[in-house]
Amino acid sequence: MARNTGDNAMIRLEGVSKWFGNFRALCDVDLTVDQGERVVICGPSGSGKSTLIRCINRLEEHESGRIVVDGIVMDDDTKHIADIRAEVGMVFQQFNLFPHLSVLENCTLGPMKARGIGRAEAQKLAMEYLEKVHIPEQAGKFPSQLSGGQQQRVAIARSLCMTPKVMLFDEPTSALDPEMIKEVLDVMIELAETGMTMICVTHEMGFAKTVADKMIFMDAGQIVEAATPADFFSNPKSERTKLFLSQILSH
Amino acid sequence: MAAPSRKKRRIHALDIIVLAAVITLVGYIAYRVDSVLVYKWDWSAIPSYLFRWDEKTGTLVPNLLIKGLVTTIRIAIWAMVVASILGVILGIARTSERLFPRLVSWAYVEFIRNIPPVPFLFLFYFFISSQIIPLLGIDEFIHSASPGTLTVAEFLFGPANLMTNFVSGMISLSMMSAAYIAEIVRAGIQAVPKGQREAGQTVGLSHFAVMRYVILPQAVERVVPPLAGQFITLIKDSSLVALISIQELSFLAMEIAISEQRFFEVWIFTGIMYFVVCYACALAFGRLERRMGAYRR
Image (cartoon, rainbow over all chains, first blue to last red):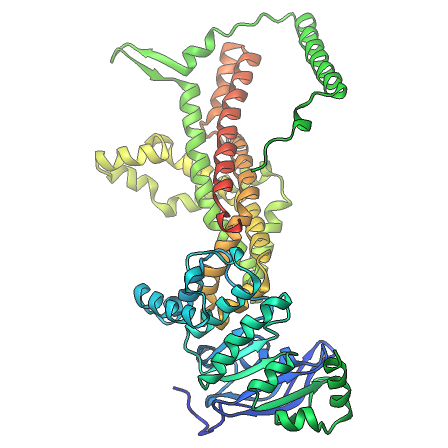
């Protein structure tokens, strides 16, 4: 394995920058996430939150700086990228379930085709995780037959089937109807209780207060403030953070 | 399914006018043909070209038109298979992240699409028959094959003495069709949302596995309707290989029409034969299309 840094942190970003054309999406971002730590990232749209977590599993390529995940340095080596992706699960805003596969097949595809696990074992594993997200009875259905909340829970189960060490959530509840947000957040809270290392981009401040070990506020591609939830909500240091919090908490 | 609405079934005045106009037009053309051409219709020759009585065996055996039809179907099916394989590879290459495969595929597609089939057929036929066919070693195969394998080969590729000819024509036709199929495949792949690829990557799938298990199965469904059209075009375009003396339906129909001096009857009948094959193909694809996409309920 490529354990080549002797680093204890699960995720370490040092001076990470990323441009889209002339637009600088990330400016010298430093971030350390320890094993088992739960980080919630918030900030206005276009602030680089999604780009930041998408760099962690190479859905976006960072242009400068250093990213290390579980001791593996992210570079152009496809082996390193594959090793990192094997340890990092991701849940998307738009679920991105495979529409041509049943719920069960969505969950078994990764383990079978990427890990080489046999069908029976993969299905057993998938049912275990579908039970953890409380929808084992939907295993035979297709994604289009499920509600948004159910689909997102399947997406979480699909990621967990790869037994990742880190889970990334990219606005997992933003595309959901209000009455379905709770069922997804409940599953995420249960997951946090198992000690999973998590990074969530979300504006669900109630959820953040419940699970976060660290709050991060981003603006214009930079981390403006990083603090414990208690400090972050009661005593934000930066003016921009205060303004942002007053806008989203006023309702 | 909802019950068919009554509105659609009711006949309006406009429908009657259109119908009357069509009938009048057809009647007029028939009248003109009848009066101007002074043509004496004689369909009696046609059946004997479908089947003839074999004196030696005392049975009814297929004659030129049926043989030609069989060759047409044979060449069309093989060309569909070869063109699909080539087209899928080219289509995937066109969506590649690397420049080289994209360029090669782009050049091929544009080259074929912007040259009419007739010059292409002539040029490629001579190139293929002089360069590629010897490489395939078909002649040696025929000479050394056991009677058993030769029977199978003849069933698949037609009579042994015309086999090299058949393969040349089939490859030419496939190469033309592959360019259009490549474009259809490219469009199908690009129509799959980007999030699907990303989701595949995050569950650890390799580039190949994402293509194989996530992108292509979804692209196939989008590709079936335009592909059906392309296959029907291919069946019809197979009549072009008559130009390079492949003895398929159009080639033999031309010979019969000349030798019998029965142009209208032979060509009308040949047209009907093509129509039956193409329409059957369209119906089959229509069924396939309805069966697929069951998950989009």
